[in-house]
Length: 316
Image (cartoon, rainbow, N blue to C red; front, side, top):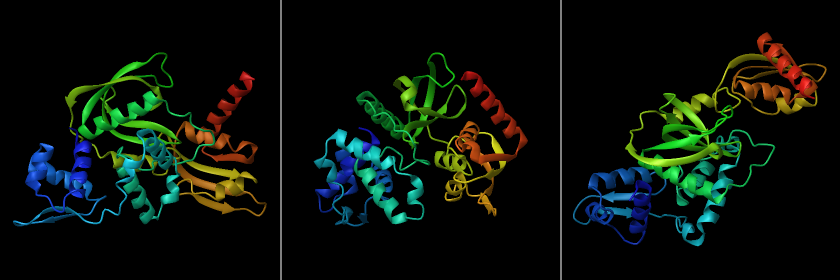
Protein backbone atom coordinates (compact mmCIF):
# COMPACT_ATOMS: atom_id res chain seq x y z
CA UNK A 1 0.00 0.00 0.00
CA UNK A 2 1.33 3.47 -0.92
CA UNK A 3 2.02 6.31 1.48
CA UNK A 4 -1.05 8.34 0.41
CA UNK A 5 -3.38 5.36 0.83
CA UNK A 6 -1.88 4.64 4.26
CA UNK A 7 -2.32 8.27 5.35
CA UNK A 8 -5.98 8.19 4.31
CA UNK A 9 -6.54 4.85 6.02
CA UNK A 10 -4.87 6.18 9.18
CA UNK A 11 -7.32 9.10 9.27
CA UNK A 12 -10.25 6.72 8.86
CA UNK A 13 -8.94 4.56 11.71
CA UNK A 14 -8.55 7.62 13.94
CA UNK A 15 -12.07 8.80 13.11
CA UNK A 16 -13.57 5.45 14.12
CA UNK A 17 -11.55 5.08 17.34
CA UNK A 18 -11.53 7.30 20.41
CA UNK A 19 -7.78 6.82 20.82
CA UNK A 20 -5.48 4.32 19.18
CA UNK A 21 -1.94 3.22 20.03
CA UNK A 22 0.93 3.85 17.61
CA UNK A 23 1.74 0.13 17.77
CA UNK A 24 -1.80 -0.84 16.78
CA UNK A 25 -1.77 1.64 13.88
CA UNK A 26 1.53 0.16 12.71
CA UNK A 27 0.09 -3.36 12.82
CA UNK A 28 -3.11 -2.36 11.02
CA UNK A 29 -1.18 -0.57 8.27
CA UNK A 30 1.64 -3.15 8.19
CA UNK A 31 4.38 -0.58 8.65
CA UNK A 32 6.86 0.35 11.39
CA UNK A 33 5.99 2.65 14.30
CA UNK A 34 8.58 5.06 12.94
CA UNK A 35 6.63 5.18 9.67
CA UNK A 36 3.42 5.96 11.60
CA UNK A 37 5.24 8.94 13.11
CA UNK A 38 6.15 10.10 9.59
CA UNK A 39 2.51 9.78 8.49
CA UNK A 40 1.43 11.91 11.47
CA UNK A 41 3.97 14.58 10.52
CA UNK A 42 2.64 14.57 6.94
CA UNK A 43 -0.95 14.89 8.19
CA UNK A 44 -0.27 17.58 10.80
CA UNK A 45 -0.82 20.56 8.43
CA UNK A 46 -4.32 19.28 7.65
CA UNK A 47 -5.54 17.46 10.76
CA UNK A 48 -5.22 18.05 14.50
CA UNK A 49 -3.89 14.70 15.76
CA UNK A 50 -3.19 14.61 19.49
CA UNK A 51 -0.35 12.38 20.67
CA UNK A 52 -0.44 11.30 24.34
CA UNK A 53 2.15 9.18 26.15
CA UNK A 54 1.50 6.54 28.81
CA UNK A 55 -0.56 3.43 29.23
CA UNK A 56 -3.76 5.21 28.20
CA UNK A 57 -2.01 7.21 25.51
CA UNK A 58 -1.91 7.01 21.74
CA UNK A 59 -3.18 9.06 18.83
CA UNK A 60 -6.54 10.83 18.77
CA UNK A 61 -8.10 12.92 16.03
CA UNK A 62 -9.25 16.23 17.52
CA UNK A 63 -12.12 18.09 15.85
CA UNK A 64 -11.83 17.12 12.19
CA UNK A 65 -14.48 19.79 11.40
CA UNK A 66 -16.47 17.34 9.31
CA UNK A 67 -14.70 18.10 6.04
CA UNK A 68 -13.16 14.68 5.48
CA UNK A 69 -16.45 12.76 4.92
CA UNK A 70 -17.17 14.90 1.80
CA UNK A 71 -15.21 12.31 -0.16
CA UNK A 72 -17.87 9.70 0.62
CA UNK A 73 -20.61 11.81 -1.02
CA UNK A 74 -18.93 12.31 -4.42
CA UNK A 75 -17.91 10.10 -7.29
CA UNK A 76 -14.25 10.00 -8.34
CA UNK A 77 -15.11 12.01 -11.47
CA UNK A 78 -16.94 14.68 -9.42
CA UNK A 79 -13.93 14.94 -7.10
CA UNK A 80 -11.68 15.37 -10.12
CA UNK A 81 -13.87 18.16 -11.54
CA UNK A 82 -13.86 20.06 -8.23
CA UNK A 83 -10.08 19.74 -7.88
CA UNK A 84 -9.61 20.89 -11.47
CA UNK A 85 -11.80 23.94 -10.82
CA UNK A 86 -9.89 24.80 -7.63
CA UNK A 87 -6.61 24.62 -9.56
CA UNK A 88 -7.96 26.99 -12.24
CA UNK A 89 -8.30 29.86 -9.74
CA UNK A 90 -5.80 32.68 -10.25
CA UNK A 91 -3.23 32.25 -7.48
CA UNK A 92 -2.90 36.04 -7.16
CA UNK A 93 -6.36 35.99 -5.57
CA UNK A 94 -4.92 34.04 -2.62
CA UNK A 95 -2.00 36.36 -1.93
CA UNK A 96 -2.25 37.57 1.65
CA UNK A 97 -5.33 35.44 2.36
CA UNK A 98 -3.76 32.70 4.46
CA UNK A 99 -7.09 31.56 5.94
CA UNK A 100 -8.61 30.93 2.50
CA UNK A 101 -5.45 29.19 1.25
CA UNK A 102 -5.51 26.90 4.29
CA UNK A 103 -9.20 26.08 3.74
CA UNK A 104 -8.53 25.14 0.12
CA UNK A 105 -5.53 23.07 1.24
CA UNK A 106 -7.88 21.03 3.41
CA UNK A 107 -10.31 20.53 0.52
CA UNK A 108 -7.42 19.57 -1.74
CA UNK A 109 -6.19 16.97 0.77
CA UNK A 110 -9.71 15.65 1.40
CA UNK A 111 -10.02 14.85 -2.29
CA UNK A 112 -6.58 13.22 -2.46
CA UNK A 113 -3.54 15.48 -2.48
CA UNK A 114 -1.85 15.71 -5.90
CA UNK A 115 1.18 17.57 -4.47
CA UNK A 116 -0.07 20.88 -5.79
CA UNK A 117 -2.22 23.76 -4.70
CA UNK A 118 -3.18 26.54 -7.06
CA UNK A 119 -0.17 26.98 -9.31
CA UNK A 120 -1.82 29.20 -11.94
CA UNK A 121 -0.14 32.53 -12.54
CA UNK A 122 -2.36 33.95 -15.26
CA UNK A 123 -5.96 33.09 -16.17
CA UNK A 124 -5.94 32.22 -19.89
CA UNK A 125 -8.14 33.99 -22.43
CA UNK A 126 -8.94 30.72 -24.19
CA UNK A 127 -10.47 27.65 -22.62
CA UNK A 128 -8.53 24.46 -22.06
CA UNK A 129 -9.92 21.35 -23.70
CA UNK A 130 -11.65 19.03 -21.22
CA UNK A 131 -9.32 16.29 -20.00
CA UNK A 132 -10.05 12.82 -21.31
CA UNK A 133 -10.60 9.91 -18.95
CA UNK A 134 -7.24 8.38 -19.87
CA UNK A 135 -5.56 11.67 -18.98
CA UNK A 136 -7.30 11.69 -15.59
CA UNK A 137 -5.89 8.20 -14.99
CA UNK A 138 -2.49 9.49 -16.08
CA UNK A 139 -2.67 12.20 -13.41
CA UNK A 140 -3.59 9.68 -10.73
CA UNK A 141 -0.79 7.28 -11.68
CA UNK A 142 1.81 10.04 -11.88
CA UNK A 143 0.65 11.43 -8.51
CA UNK A 144 1.26 8.01 -6.99
CA UNK A 145 4.73 7.86 -8.57
CA UNK A 146 5.56 11.27 -7.08
CA UNK A 147 4.44 10.17 -3.63
CA UNK A 148 6.28 6.86 -3.75
CA UNK A 149 9.38 8.35 -5.44
CA UNK A 150 9.43 5.98 -8.41
CA UNK A 151 11.10 6.80 -11.73
CA UNK A 152 8.92 7.00 -14.84
CA UNK A 153 9.71 6.37 -18.51
CA UNK A 154 7.77 8.65 -20.87
CA UNK A 155 7.47 9.21 -24.60
CA UNK A 156 7.24 12.98 -24.93
CA UNK A 157 6.55 15.16 -27.98
CA UNK A 158 7.88 18.66 -27.41
CA UNK A 159 7.04 21.76 -29.46
CA UNK A 160 10.05 21.28 -31.73
CA UNK A 161 9.97 17.49 -31.93
CA UNK A 162 8.85 15.74 -35.12
CA UNK A 163 8.18 12.56 -33.17
CA UNK A 164 8.00 11.58 -29.48
CA UNK A 165 11.26 10.97 -27.65
CA UNK A 166 11.79 8.59 -24.78
CA UNK A 167 12.86 10.11 -21.45
CA UNK A 168 13.49 8.58 -18.05
CA UNK A 169 12.47 11.03 -15.38
CA UNK A 170 12.18 11.45 -11.63
CA UNK A 171 8.75 13.05 -10.98
CA UNK A 172 8.60 15.81 -8.34
CA UNK A 173 5.38 17.81 -8.69
CA UNK A 174 2.20 18.25 -10.72
CA UNK A 175 1.27 21.87 -11.35
CA UNK A 176 -1.39 23.74 -13.30
CA UNK A 177 -0.30 26.70 -15.40
CA UNK A 178 -2.72 28.72 -17.55
CA UNK A 179 -5.23 25.91 -17.06
CA UNK A 180 -2.89 23.21 -18.40
CA UNK A 181 -1.31 20.48 -16.29
CA UNK A 182 2.47 20.04 -16.21
CA UNK A 183 4.74 17.52 -14.56
CA UNK A 184 7.86 19.04 -13.01
CA UNK A 185 10.54 16.36 -13.08
CA UNK A 186 14.27 15.77 -13.14
CA UNK A 187 15.12 14.53 -16.63
CA UNK A 188 17.97 12.02 -16.59
CA UNK A 189 18.60 12.63 -20.30
CA UNK A 190 19.07 16.38 -19.88
CA UNK A 191 20.40 16.12 -16.30
CA UNK A 192 18.16 19.02 -15.29
CA UNK A 193 14.67 19.96 -14.11
CA UNK A 194 12.15 20.05 -16.96
CA UNK A 195 8.45 20.93 -17.32
CA UNK A 196 6.47 18.26 -19.20
CA UNK A 197 3.01 19.18 -20.45
CA UNK A 198 0.74 16.24 -19.62
CA UNK A 199 -1.14 16.38 -22.91
CA UNK A 200 2.18 15.84 -24.75
CA UNK A 201 3.11 12.73 -22.80
CA UNK A 202 2.15 10.14 -25.40
CA UNK A 203 3.01 7.12 -23.30
CA UNK A 204 4.37 6.48 -19.84
CA UNK A 205 5.16 3.56 -17.58
CA UNK A 206 6.29 3.29 -13.99
CA UNK A 207 9.58 1.54 -13.35
CA UNK A 208 10.61 -0.26 -10.18
CA UNK A 209 13.52 2.13 -9.69
CA UNK A 210 13.25 4.20 -6.51
CA UNK A 211 14.88 7.62 -6.22
CA UNK A 212 15.40 10.04 -3.36
CA UNK A 213 14.22 13.63 -3.79
CA UNK A 214 17.31 15.79 -3.40
CA UNK A 215 15.97 18.95 -5.04
CA UNK A 216 13.87 21.61 -3.32
CA UNK A 217 11.35 21.88 -6.14
CA UNK A 218 9.22 24.53 -4.41
CA UNK A 219 12.29 26.76 -4.09
CA UNK A 220 13.04 26.30 -7.80
CA UNK A 221 9.45 27.15 -8.78
CA UNK A 222 9.55 30.23 -6.55
CA UNK A 223 12.77 31.37 -8.22
CA UNK A 224 11.32 30.67 -11.67
CA UNK A 225 8.27 32.81 -10.92
CA UNK A 226 10.33 35.65 -9.44
CA UNK A 227 10.16 38.60 -11.86
CA UNK A 228 9.07 36.22 -14.60
CA UNK A 229 6.01 36.60 -16.78
CA UNK A 230 5.79 32.81 -16.89
CA UNK A 231 6.90 29.93 -14.68
CA UNK A 232 9.53 28.60 -17.07
CA UNK A 233 12.07 31.39 -16.70
CA UNK A 234 13.92 32.24 -19.89
CA UNK A 235 15.98 35.16 -21.12
CA UNK A 236 16.08 38.21 -18.86
CA UNK A 237 15.48 41.74 -20.15
CA UNK A 238 15.63 45.20 -18.60
CA UNK A 239 12.46 46.59 -20.14
CA UNK A 240 11.48 50.18 -20.74
CA UNK A 241 8.20 50.53 -22.61
CA UNK A 242 6.05 53.53 -23.49
CA UNK A 243 2.42 52.43 -23.50
CA UNK A 244 -0.54 54.45 -24.76
CA UNK A 245 -4.24 54.12 -23.85
CA UNK A 246 -6.23 51.93 -23.77
CA UNK A 247 -3.48 49.40 -22.96
CA UNK A 248 -1.80 51.88 -20.59
CA UNK A 249 -4.68 51.50 -18.13
CA UNK A 250 -4.72 47.69 -18.37
CA UNK A 251 -0.97 47.40 -17.78
CA UNK A 252 -0.94 49.91 -14.92
CA UNK A 253 -3.79 48.14 -13.09
CA UNK A 254 -1.88 44.86 -12.66
CA UNK A 255 1.30 43.70 -10.97
CA UNK A 256 3.25 41.87 -13.66
CA UNK A 257 6.50 41.50 -11.70
CA UNK A 258 7.49 42.68 -8.23
CA UNK A 259 10.16 45.11 -9.42
CA UNK A 260 8.02 47.00 -11.94
CA UNK A 261 7.96 50.78 -11.95
CA UNK A 262 5.23 52.82 -13.64
CA UNK A 263 5.54 56.50 -14.47
CA UNK A 264 2.39 58.34 -15.55
CA UNK A 265 2.75 60.91 -18.35
CA UNK A 266 0.54 63.96 -18.96
CA UNK A 267 -0.89 62.60 -22.23
CA UNK A 268 -2.33 59.47 -20.60
CA UNK A 269 0.60 57.30 -21.59
CA UNK A 270 2.80 55.43 -19.10
CA UNK A 271 6.43 54.39 -18.94
CA UNK A 272 6.69 50.77 -17.79
CA UNK A 273 10.08 49.68 -16.45
CA UNK A 274 11.00 46.26 -15.08
CA UNK A 275 13.57 43.50 -15.16
CA UNK A 276 11.65 40.54 -16.52
CA UNK A 277 12.34 36.94 -17.47
CA UNK A 278 10.28 35.01 -19.95
CA UNK A 279 11.86 34.79 -23.39
CA UNK A 280 9.10 34.13 -25.97
CA UNK A 281 6.39 34.94 -23.43
CA UNK A 282 7.71 38.51 -23.09
CA UNK A 283 7.58 38.90 -26.88
CA UNK A 284 4.00 37.58 -26.96
CA UNK A 285 3.02 39.88 -24.10
CA UNK A 286 4.41 42.95 -25.87
CA UNK A 287 2.85 41.96 -29.20
CA UNK A 288 -0.53 41.58 -27.49
CA UNK A 289 -0.47 45.36 -26.81
CA UNK A 290 -0.54 46.06 -30.54
CA UNK A 291 0.06 49.62 -31.66
CA UNK A 292 -0.25 50.90 -28.07
CA UNK A 293 3.30 49.93 -27.16
CA UNK A 294 6.70 51.38 -28.04
CA UNK A 295 9.87 49.55 -26.99
CA UNK A 296 12.46 52.01 -25.71
CA UNK A 297 14.84 49.43 -24.22
CA UNK A 298 16.45 47.01 -24.81
CA UNK A 299 17.38 47.46 -28.46
CA UNK A 300 18.00 43.72 -29.00
CA UNK A 301 14.42 42.90 -27.96
CA UNK A 302 13.12 45.66 -30.21
CA UNK A 303 14.99 44.11 -33.17
CA UNK A 304 13.79 40.62 -32.26
CA UNK A 305 10.14 41.70 -32.28
CA UNK A 306 10.66 43.59 -35.56
CA UNK A 307 11.95 40.34 -37.05
CA UNK A 308 8.88 38.47 -35.73
CA UNK A 309 6.59 41.09 -37.30
CA UNK A 310 8.41 40.90 -40.66
CA UNK A 311 7.99 37.12 -40.73
CA UNK A 312 4.32 37.47 -39.77
CA UNK A 313 3.71 39.94 -42.62
CA UNK A 314 5.40 37.58 -45.10
CA UNK A 315 3.06 34.81 -44.01
CA UNK A 316 -0.06 36.83 -44.95
